[in-house]
Image 1 (cartoon, rainbow, N blue to C red):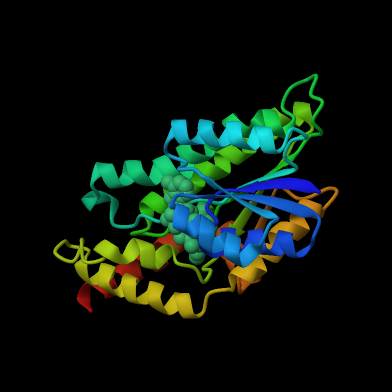
Image 2 (spheres, rainbow, N blue to C red):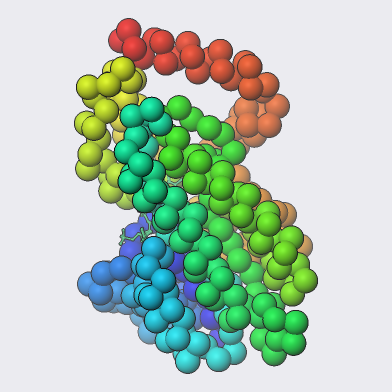
Length: 283
Ligand SMILES: NC(=O)c1ccc[n+]([C@@H]2O[C@H](COP(=O)([O-])OP(=O)(O)OC[C@H]3O[C@@H](n4cnc5c(N)ncnc54)[C@H](OP(=O)(O)O)[C@@H]3O)[C@@H](O)[C@H]2O)c1
């Protein structure tokens, strides 16, 4: 049985991915949760091939504790690490509190660095490693390719993750460790409802009306978003590829997105976005 570690399996893409791998019968999934009740809930759902580990990606002590437990459980190493845990912080950069920006970066960027570096020995990252080289899959976003106004903190964090993934991929190639990025578009999960708690924060600013429209659009996009199981299947298939690409966009309207992200000049995008923002102000 191969051991795989997924961060953030309480809900969403992490939970679906844990479930998908377990359904294949060849994997023991170690999944991180922050709340022991979530561990019990997911264990009840996934059964004995699931091992919950309490771990907060912003806390080095908790990561080290998790590492020591997993090292004992998996002396043969990990075949796969999925850096999935993440949060979404949004709002106009001009109005943002620094602490909110720092929180975003601490989870989505520093958290990946902390977890990856801690677990690299279990992925075979030494020149004389007895452990076969593993794979790392980082869950980025289309927000790691395209910069959307009022989604700045999240986009910046995912752009940083894209860069970090490229650097890890090149540096870890000396050990034979693969690093792959998955870039989901809107996906049905709890990430936006978890973020919605303070959604009236920017209503009093120049961006108030645009913000209100954006919150409405996010609600709408939730209903047209893709199912987490599509992501889970993709992560599994990509992991199983002998020679995977560096990154995979997973969205509805893949071609339109790809065309917009890579072929439309910034100047044209800027004109369109300014028009939409001005319309939002007058609405
Ligand atoms: N949903 C989308 O539309 C979408 C699109 C593109 C990319 N993504 C990316 O997909 C990944 C998974 O998100 P999701 O949509 O499945 O959202 P989700 O359902 O909210 O799941 C996020 C997971 O991360 C965990 N987490 C949050 N902060 C953490 C921390 N400090 N330490 C450890 N775990 C932490 C959460 O645990 P708690 O339950 O304890 O908070 C939860 O298990 C994220 O990286 C996200 O950016 C999502």
